[in-house]
Amino acid sequence: MINSDELVTHLTELRKRLIWVMLFFIVTLAGGLYMSPTVLMYIKNRPAAADIAWNVFSLTDGMFIYMKCGFLVAVFFTLPLALYHVWAFVRPGLTDEEAKKTFWFVPMAFVLFTIGVAFSFYVAFPMMVSFLSKMNQTVGAVETYGMDRYFSLMFSVVLPLALAFEMPAVVLFLTRLGILRPALLKKARKYVYLALAIVGSMISPPDFVSHLSVTIPLILLFELSILVSRWYVHRRELDHPFIEPKGGESHV
Image (cartoon, rainbow, N blue to C red; front, side, top):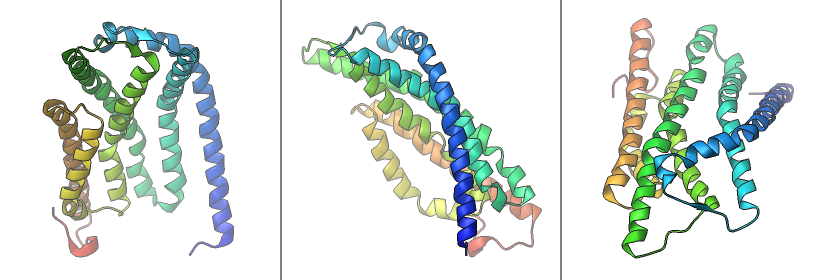
């Protein structure tokens, strides 16, 4: 039971860590705004946007896109520090061995997030743009795209997929803390599959191939999460053979 003094101490520490993260975010936001023209031109020259004229229908469209781009750059570079502070905040409740074994969460989560950004930007989003453009041409529509709408669509695809790629790191982290077990993940598999299929349908074009190209990687990430969770539990049982697994289950 946490008393009031301990609660105040934890909240004070949390506030300090949030302040550090926010200060770093502000600094990287300034850098992101400086980098925005270069980033936007890189996106504009990608095949997914090469044949699309970016139109603005409001005087503020360009400014908002400029700021959104700087914001995303800041989020990307602030993420490692934020992940570190998450680990550091729970560190006092861990043993030295647990702390050493969970520190990997910081670099692993950032690497997976980066892979997710790359996959969604270079694979999923171009596929979506191609499909939607062909659909518009099929009905004889004149394609006139607003810059703001283009980027809103891109962000709605890239960010959810990038976050989904964090799944193996989060599952392994929670397994190491004893919160998740492989048996629990296996039991929830059919429900998770359904949820991932719904998410995949929401962020992909309505054609079958595009839907599978997004949903299958999400399902594979979940299966990878089960494997790494099972690997960790199995290794822990080999290292500590006399420790009874929680729930009396040791296999998936």
